[in-house]
Length: 130
Image 1 (cartoon, one colour):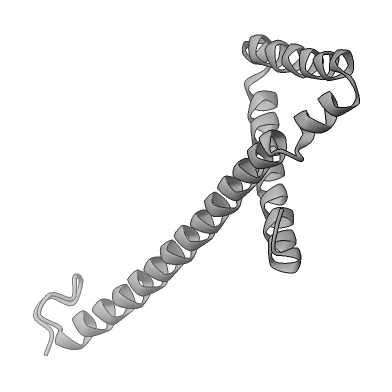
Image 2 (tube, rainbow, N blue to C red):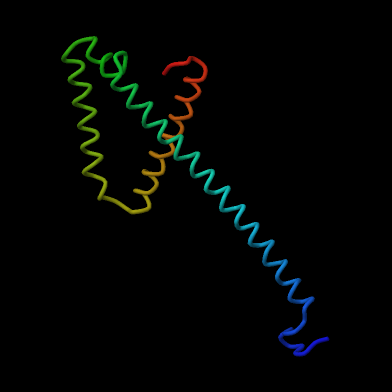
């Protein structure tokens, strides 16, 4: 029994069909959102593992700084000075250039830390140490 055939008001079957279609789309969107959040959390965990592993590799007793200074004081100072010079130039040059290029560089940096995190976690699982 249709009261207003143009709008479907009062048609219970049409209302049920539309409601079921809406609930399926909502479920699909919710599942997509949960999957996207899980992937984002995994990338965040890998980036944090990459940053932490890099810091550990840098300042540990057998790390990169100790190896640089282990050869000689001047070689270690030169290595640290050049690293600070590169970091300083990168810091000051971040406002130059196109925005799209800057986001490309930052995306590359984030995903390289995520890749380092994968490497450090695999190394931790295989060797038991970094």
